[in-house]
Image (cartoon, rainbow, N blue to C red; front, side, top):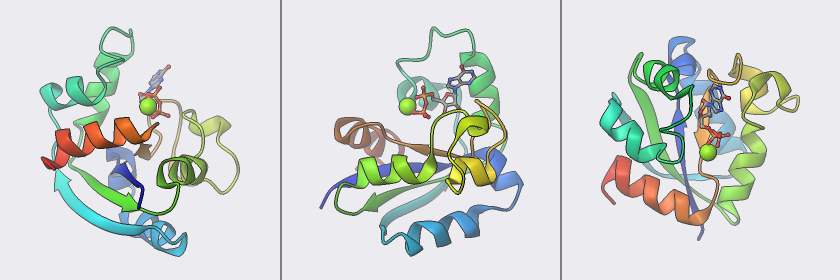
Length: 133
Ligand code: IDP
Ligand code: MG
């Protein structure tokens, strides 16, 4: 079964939205097959966001992602990668479709509540980086 990787980001953790996000995950028939709370650091984020390290917003992104611990995990479903991206909405919370997780719980382009892998290969890399699997 296809797997994807998710992060409940610091803004959602600060707003006590972990439970609601987990409920949405389960109601949408994803199986949670890995789960961990972890405080990220710059080294980990440079691996996770390796294509973004030279962007002007990268320092702001690191600062945001290290505000509080995050919850990371593995989701399993048919077409998990695309299905999870559809459920979370586009990167900018202000443009995310109504009812998506980023629309419901995100604030803007940086503080967007959750992460979702963009491809099966990205998911495999991220699961290695965050969960050593
Ligand atoms: P994604 O999370 O929708 O896949 P990416 O382009 O991979 O979007 O960017 C990773 C994360 O970096 C975003 O989720 C968001 O938190 C942050 N980010 C992306 N683009 C911008 C931007 O233009 N300004 C500020 N933060 C950004
Ligand atoms: Mg991405």
